[in-house]
Image (tube, rainbow, N blue to C red; front, side):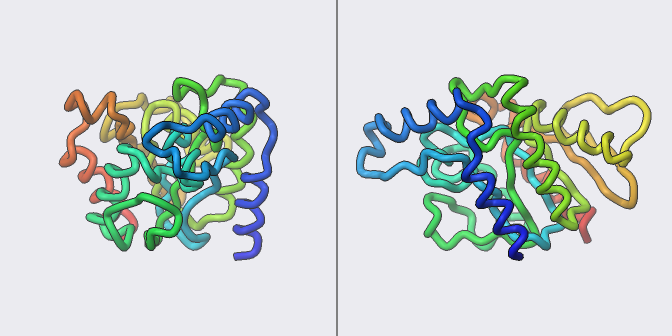
Length: 224
């Protein structure tokens, strides 16, 4: 537990990406009118969940007025509304809502992380920024007994696949990203793909609740 807490403290203190650090601080200072009374987090957002989790959910990055405001990944934005509702339904969370760090939400056998721990402009970290953050994903995977990985979106899929291949969990041609794609890896591990629950996907119907629920239902089956 101490090493897990140390990892999260080091993530929060990270200064590897000057552009992202400037952006997060600027957003925290200017705020959004709807959240003018908030004191924004404005720093890298740590992993959420405990070090004994069998499920690791990998997202893209905190939202500028979501995780960058609340200090908890996928908290305070519509993507988080979708994610934690689905995790609750599959038994990986104690409640379906996520509004603030002190709202009582607890994950059950699950950790949520991101490819980039800082909110990026236009939700697009650069390849260099993703590479700068990769060691945090490596160490997160090192410290978990995870057997199922869920990648939310193509960038998370590529990052997680690349790490799986580096660890020799996967060999041969890498599977292409599509919603519902599943890659069986070494020692009973699995990687599942989902469209990211961004408004771009959920408002257009590209991702529906039954589609999203099916991913976490499958994750539950594989863990069980």
